Image (cartoon, rainbow, N blue to C red; front, side):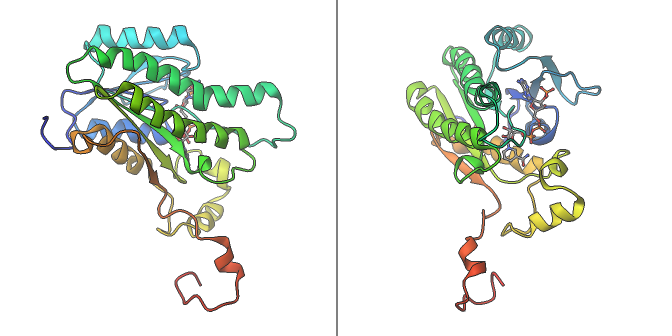
Length: 258
Ligand SMILES: NC(=O)c1ccc[n+]([C@@H]2O[C@H](COP(=O)([O-])OP(=O)(O)OC[C@H]3O[C@@H](n4cnc5c(N)ncnc54)[C@H](OP(=O)(O)O)[C@@H]3O)[C@@H](O)[C@H]2O)c1
């Protein structure tokens, strides 16, 4: 059995959407642990912090070309983090079928496509590989304003469990159900700095996550320290949401939520 450690020396890691936001934190965490990181997105960044390949992960031909490029250049693929995802706000009553189609494609079908291509490579490697899906707490609770996104992330968690069974023992498949993260885009979701601060107070840990903290959890799941973990989705949400009834009720619940 490989040594029990978090180090990723010699590992080749693909992080989809790894150029900004949560993905940049994930890419940087793997680099800090010694991995060679390849990122992809539709838009090439001006100053890429890691090797970059342009790819729209919803397109099978582009994903196949991405995998070929990684193999040509590095000869192996040890870890894939399916991070590219997200959704703008849209009322479910009014959003178009095309909008919903695109959201499900990006957040559910693209991770499946990338995972399929990665699995084909990893099954041929003696050491197999590890796939990490970046999911969301939106898949675990109502997701008003991003209903299709929440449904797609719920589907992604189920996909994680199914793929882990189909592709064992060579490939482990796990996920992170991520809570609110302080990214460059946080203001789009939560408004001004005061809005972000107010939102942070709703989290038991009192703050939003830093992107690298999500990255550290992905490193753990991909590492030999998690060698017996597969099919799991780890909640990384700072303690989650305090049940709303506690604020509304007038019984004495002590001072912790006051
Ligand atoms: N931010 C949060 O608070 C939060 C909370 C829970 C879960 N998450 C999850 O974390 C992941 C990243 O979220 P984020 O907030 O960091 O998003 P973000 O800032 O919008 O970054 C998304 C990244 O994915 C790339 N991307 C988008 N569509 C793509 C496509 N079709 N093909 C290839 N790359 C694509 C983007 O680059 P291009 O646009 O150039 O392609 C970008 O690099 C998502 O899966 C999201 O659901 C985020």
